[in-house]
Amino acid sequence: EEVLARDYDLGFSGNSEDVVMHAIHLLGNCITITNTSRNNEFFITPSTTVPAVFELSFYSNGILHVFFKEAVIACSLHALLNKRHRNGISGILPNVISQEQLVRKAASLCYLLCYEGTVSLPCQVLGQVCHEAIEQFIQYGVLLVAEVRFW
Image (cartoon, rainbow, N blue to C red; front, side, top):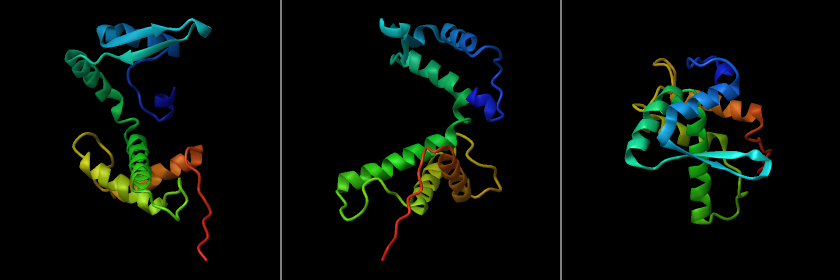
């Protein structure tokens, strides 16, 4: 549903549960399904054998581009926060990152990953693409804008 909402088509249609069951059937030995007793929930985890990793990598290529920008923003944010906590920077709000700093980190990560997937069209600037992805995170409520006053 999320993929379709982004105007992408992966060749599957129908009920979401049917699509998931078909995917589980396709992945076969590449995944492990664990059933829990409460609420009849089950967890799907990837197998870490070398053949399974290669096969899962192959299948992920079809959907990777759909969430590429969001993944870059999330990884950039994680890297910035991790660096801040590791260095023990004091005097700064603990979970506040400047949007400009996040855009720069994300753009550098996009540049590093430019041969792994399509981040932007050739005529687009990476910084602007990252800024727009961050704005979407803000719009969806994933990131919050803090009003920080400097006296």
